[in-house]
Amino acid sequence: MQTHEARLDALRKQLAADGLDGFVIPISDEHMSEYVGAYAQRLEWLTGFGGSAGTAVVLADKAAIFVDGRYTLQVRDQVDGRLWSYESVPQTSVAAWLGEHAPQGARIGYDAWLHAKGWADGVAQALSARAASLVPVATNPVDAVWDDQPAPSLAPAVPHADEHAGKSAHEKRAEVAEWLGARGLDAAVISALDSVAWLLNIRGADVDRTPVALSFVLAHADGTADLFIAPEKVTPELAAHLGNAVRVQPREAFVPALQALQGRKVAVDPERAVAAIFHALEGAGAQVVAVTDPVVLPKAIKNPVEQAGHRAAQARDGAAIARFLRWIAVEAPQGAVTELSAADRLQAFRADTSLLRDLSFDTISGSGPNGAVVHYRVSEETSRTLEPNSVYLVDSGGQYLDGTTDITRTVWIGPDAPPLEVKDRFTRVLKGHIALARAVFPKGTAGSQLDSFARQFLWAAGLDYAHGTGHGVGSFLSVHEGPQRIAKAAGGQAGTGQELLPGMILSNEPGYYKAGAYGIRIENLVLVERREMAGAEGEFFGFETLTFAPIARDLVDVALLSAEELDWLNAYHARVRAVLAPQLDGDDLAWLEAACAPL
Image 1: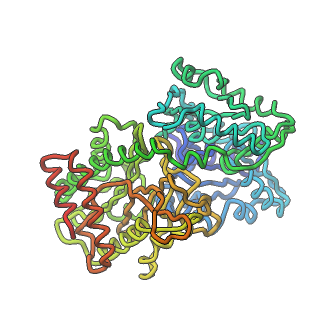
Image 2 (image 1 turned 135 degrees about the horizontal axis):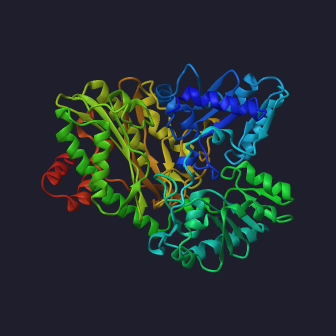
Image 3 (image 1 turned 120 degrees about the horizontal axis):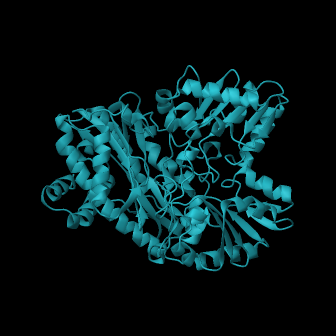
């Protein structure tokens, strides 16, 4: 098997043969997906980095890998510092780094099917100061040297029943057609995989942990659509579901279809459509209107059927979590449980429901110092034993036909009592979680305006965490869904300016991480709902908590909680008990009763 050093050397030779002085390698696919199929894992193949967000730049004499604060520790564990310099985002960027390090007059290659147009424009501008240029490649040079690169999945696409979707694909296409007509547009490019899936009520198995099918859609103002998808993926059942108003064409027909839109006004989302789509349309003489994909907001605002499905999925998932937490409490103090075996056991508890379709992401199962790696991915090489008297963090989720779950729980592995520092940090995280859960806010409030609710008690002790506080969640779709987000607004992060609207589902997940020691995170999913308030002037919203699983009572320093916070925690545990008890029996039920006892 080739070493990562040999792969880097092979890529440099390929770049030289292609007349390029450098190349940019993102974690991305033709749909700007967060999680990508095995065929598109170019960054991991080249560098060894297994995170879900990152970019590398390779020049003839140097190379750099760019990650954000979630992966500061992970990148150093997985990527050879002799070969790559570690660069932190947003403190720097690919554009800024190339503006400083690209050779004078260099030709830097990029794959226009893997990058946004705005990104390409920004990098090209930074390079111009060195008389260098950004060059779209006809063939990705990483693919040229990746001998055993997997092929894209040909798994069949399947209908997603209206009983789960809550709205037919015909109704959704009609709404997009109305949106186009109101703006005088002829068509919209729908290239994000979860947007395609939501619009046509289809699902797939082409990307691990996200039930989508590799495809593009052109939605037209007359309510019809063109679906570009590998023919092998289209079953008679899917064709019947799509009906006559959706024309099915092979993926190879997508670019010619774009080129046929000469003179038409076409909506394209600059955040979700790759540069190559813009190039094809502009090159053909189409009038491109850069605007957010019309599916994004309706997809984020869950209809009543989707909301009910989420509640059912969360209740089912919570019972599996409770069984797992009892198992951990019994088995881990004996010193025989590892991060890998714990993750496997948790998946088995979910599978026992007989309704689990997949995990919603690779389980983050982190013991002790591994828990301090925010997006840690356990492997055979890194798996630690859950040692007695240590902190264990588990962030996990399931994909069910009626909903997508995401929950983090942090527990203390006994037998001794947890240290005061750990209890202090855990309680500060809990206080932030409660503050956000209890928040009431006026219509028009954006996620960035609520972020400090969750951080304030950590800030008061000179502490913080390097990730967002909340992300959107799909309905049997992506576990990370926009446009809504709860995070610091610094750097213009996507979604932080989006107002929160009733029907949106987000995570509530403050945390604390002590490098080399432990990590703490408490995560529930919440639903934005209307709040009726006597004397209120205007519309006000709050959150319905959707996730039900015990929060570690032995890690709570009750003295740090206000009376209102303690009331919230006890009321939450009473609700956990009410939701989960009917699904449990025997030792599991007895454990739940103790775990939910009032403090």
